[in-house]
Image 1 (cartoon, rainbow, N blue to C red):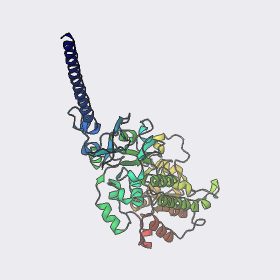
Image 2 (cartoon, rainbow, N blue to C red):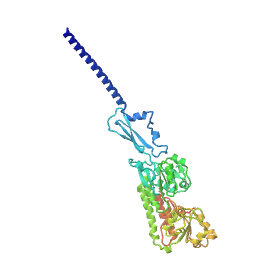
Image 3 (cartoon, rainbow, N blue to C red):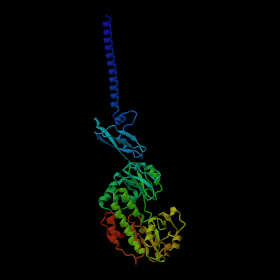
Image 4 (spheres, rainbow, N blue to C red):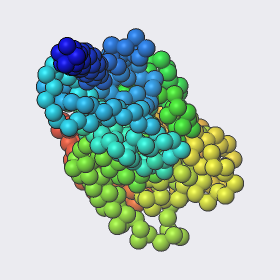
Length: 454
């Protein structure tokens, strides 16, 4: 009996051991299955983030920067793809979103996010971190010697300008990118092809930096780049006010236009035509200075320029009008004046008195309008001046004035008036070529070439 009991006891112990071992294995399997299920829930971190109530979902409408108020807002392009996995999202210091993938197949598909920055400008004091890893921005040094971060040309779709010079240059080099026209450009008559006039007349009209602007209008226009002038005293403030890059060109000297054309060509992605126009500009100046630079100093004529504010309003020595007189071989009223302030030197509306003009006793007087010319000729105070006595008071031609894009033709006209025996051009032909190249206009007549402003 004892032997049989021992055998039975051992058999029962073996059954109990097998039973307990099965329970343990079953519990282990359940734990492993639970762990596997939890792991599967965490496979798609992008979907998790988008659907989380704690995190703001990616919204195309909000993230493309349409409100124009956030310079560093990234722009996301959303592309459906079936090959992505374990996407690692890295938020960088400049608010970009980088997605890396090891290209393992993911069964439910996913959205890959490629980032480009919205084109926002930065002056030399601003952060330029956007340019380090992005191919859609670049740095440009403008004519105010400011380093500006701008979109690359292919990412510039809309440009607004705060002065008629860059407005014209944008129209000439990339008309499809011109987002608006300034009030001065809009008000002045222009010789351009009829279809171009129709397009220009249909654009919104903005202010100019020297007359005032509507900030809300500019924000609504939402340009990618704003172009102003080196004379604009509010360049840095404008850069702060608007998300767009703010770039400055110059017309302070006739020779500045050449560099302005080249800079605008880089900005707009049309360097070929910009360089052609800049070369034409430089060649036209050289054509004049090759003659006038040989005139001895003691034979250079004295000139007085009366601006559009009246006979007793002139310009400072650091203006395009004064530079034209200098390049044409003349000596302007304020060329040798050392008492002017820096502001007065660039002023195009300096008030003078008749005593100053009498003391200067110019050999030639150039007026902006026919009305000013007639006022001087009929005013007894001016009769003792050499220019009046010798019949050398001239109203500048309307389409070849001493200001604006046509001012290079104003140089040729001025040089001929100052030195008719030395400087001889076929002025009508030169004007036709100029308008064909710069305004794409081939119908200017000899009568228009001689026309003056009333």
